[in-house]
Image (cartoon, rainbow, N blue to C red; front, side, top):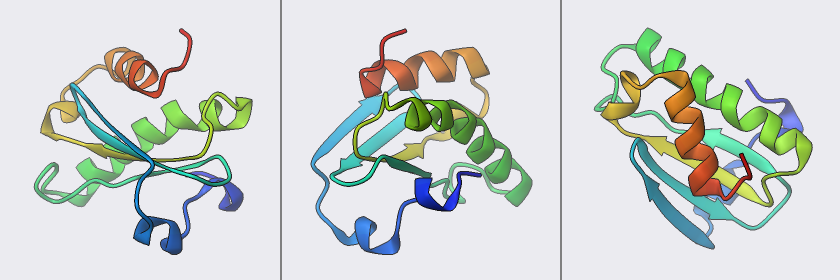
Length: 104
């Protein structure tokens, strides 16, 4: 879980995204604002709550240090697809960093 100041507010979701991107394991939307992040996992991606929470925690563990170090500018919302369920953590991290434009 991200700290309160690193989370995305409800009003941000209602704005129009500044940038969008796709990667092997899903898509992202970028908004203007204070560096923060969110992960949205639907029931179509993971049918059970424990699976959704596990995937959400894995992605939060990837974006949390990026937010804290300032590697992410603005708000990032990640929408994983079903391929992310079986992906290794290292693959998921590499692909997310590549689509976000973070130096490896």
